Length: 489
Image (cartoon, rainbow, N blue to C red; front, side, top):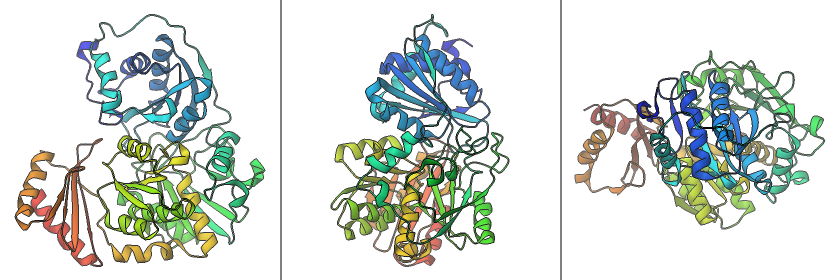
């Protein structure tokens, strides 16, 4: 296939994602590597990849393109996305000016993609270089270039997330956060149910044969001799065997059908908390002791409140899909809520502009200023377990009042023929009722007692609906049914 014939539809608003090999193959991965170097001029690039069957092949082609374009590579191998972020900003003084994670995140088997960052782990999105990289590829006269002078350094042991360097950063550089070394002490025991199935990422360093994000491999004091997590945390594991075929289903606990195994295991094992991740470990999902899935929406408010206790008056970034609880909780904690368009690139940009201490999306992405404004799948559950231990409250007790105050539908996905036409049809129905309308992302329509957001996905051909109300879960259900009638025309 020549360059002129390539399908470049895998370039999305804030990452690269498509079916393999129809939309993304080794040849295109190679060209992405070359174009990334030409556009970003990174000097040295950190590259990692997830457990998907095609990921090693795509990463190898990508790294060949990078080195042949004249840049160096630090190959960290099989890992989670936040490990690429960490190594990119952690090694900035050593000349690292970019990072690429080969992953399709939560997409089903058969998809793959890439997440790109530049110096300091700043995201490369459509309007900050991603489409420029795409256009460079489209203008390439031949699919292969000459040999460059770049070198490939393999640094797979220890993994940056589970090794001492990553732990030291969370202990020291997040000060005065609750994760600051000796100050983070557990005051009551907790048993955690760890479901590794949604995130079957195995890297060296997690026990026998590895397993990201298996916490006891490098994080407990037994192995790193630090007061990072005290001995009072116990771990129960399920689905420990990684498999890029995803035999347990789509690696996305945001889907209701992907929560049952974790929920049942929490109940059967008598765990205090259940934890699962998505396919590239940058989203963290929690279940209470009754096995109930806790919507990420309520964790945004809880984490914001926790961090505002450490950084009084700080700014908190949130997305527009579900907002009422976050806004109220942030204001009550003395913080300043600021709305951003959905998506990691947009959240991170506004966090930097506003010097926000934390950003959260209801989809379970959590961003931290002290982690270079990047999202982490590790920090959220550490903060929550600390809060549970110190307060003696269960997760349910920490969020039940907020859930009652602002019940929500959770995100509901629909496949429609025309996303924008459907949004326009729904908006035309409600506009005569004079609601408050916000177009930050898709359209948000707000009445006194309920509101909804309707938007097209930036990564999948889907229309996404979120509905919330004030202390009336029945109203949420009623409005979801009414909206579905409009959506289906």
